[in-house]
Image (cartoon, rainbow, N blue to C red):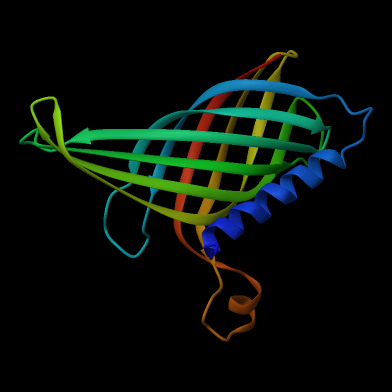
Length: 193
């Protein structure tokens, strides 16, 4: 049985997250939070297509003062003018958050993996006649900041480069820095328990 490259990449990302989580100091304070967010997504930088707005949520967990994890899902559903086609986009991302400074205002770096689902359904009224789903896998990285107010509430914003890949260019910076095909802004809040 052959395992796809995407499945192996996802398994490698999950293994890395579990190893980092288990390596966190036992005495570190952990905080678990649930929240909501808004996203502005550019799927493809090579086209002149406008960005898309998504709503979604995230689960955040701080495993040490300088390390955290985020699992997020956003959704966008729209119908065409004739109401015969419904399109749903669902990006799901798992990210490692690294905080260089600990405090009420904490900037962070993030990196992780994303699974991006796109479903097109043909409709007759409310009945679905045909449904086709495609998906893409991609790495992402970015920078952001979180402002924690008290012990139980935080707001955050970040910018993420999506669909990171190796550059084909032979210049030094192109060999060192990855290229990207998309980007996204996110802003949201989290209630910590």
